Image (tube, rainbow, N blue to C red; front, side, top):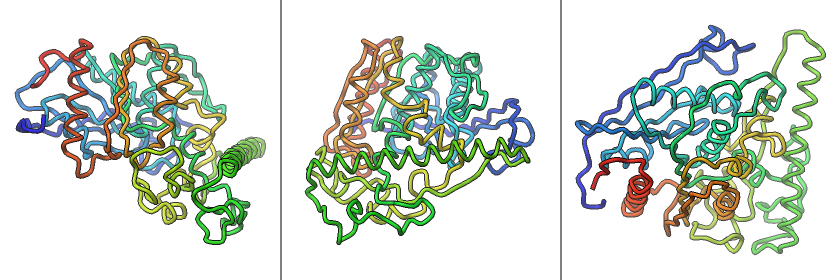
Length: 398
């Protein structure tokens, strides 16, 4: 793979539009108020190399067409779709059930309009748990409403199953990951400077310092879960209040402060792997914790319940992995991942119900493979070999 010349390929826009009657406009733009939802993606199409197989990437909120792995697959001569959800680059109002529906629209388009016979979901980062959620609902559809109680019918959506799943550099889910990163020292959600000094691990005055005692870490985790549940109860109560008042206000936005606080970031002896200490995929954890780009920083009531609530989200990784029985799964763990905690991949591996599962570790690989072309090449080679061996890719590139 390292020595092969990259294949020439083109970026072909994909625009999908479908009618959907929504009660309110969730994000800025014309689509919600006009009764149509518009999705934008890209097809990475190798020149002169037809294929019956396509690899679909989707992240709930990010666009992935400029990331190393999709482009490396196209460089190798494989067909790729990078699918943007209706919440691309804006997860403040994101509803996971609607993202799963959006992914189903791309799946149907790939099979029925583009003519692909084999469709492989590549769940990278936050797309990992999305892929599991989607496939679980495609195999055994059950959801007819969101966690907020709003009707949304995935059971009758006719979601088409994937032919295989690649779970790579992916965490448990947005809800579970956020909970492990919530700063439990926050005492008042409206006043983030009011904090419990005993849990404020980034403060020099915190009595607990790295390396952390196991009892302290256990207490820290309990407090993180309690904070998540406190916000969930508040969101439910506020929705109930708005519904009872019935004056036209249906939703409310809010800020979640300090969401990149994990003892693992500053104590590399906790859940050790090859990651860089005192660092995250977004930078210095102390800065990211209070910065504007943190997970769940800006949210709405319904969005919190669907994508961030530990107890209510339908998109939790192990929950859905346990429902997947019909397709092969290739799980790839990058051992120097600076976004995915070391405990997450083993948890997914243990939960997967499909008997056809394989697990690969790429040592020293980071979340984005930045500056690691040889490790990225190993990843692409493993994907091609697995796809061919499982009968998902005819005439694989050399």
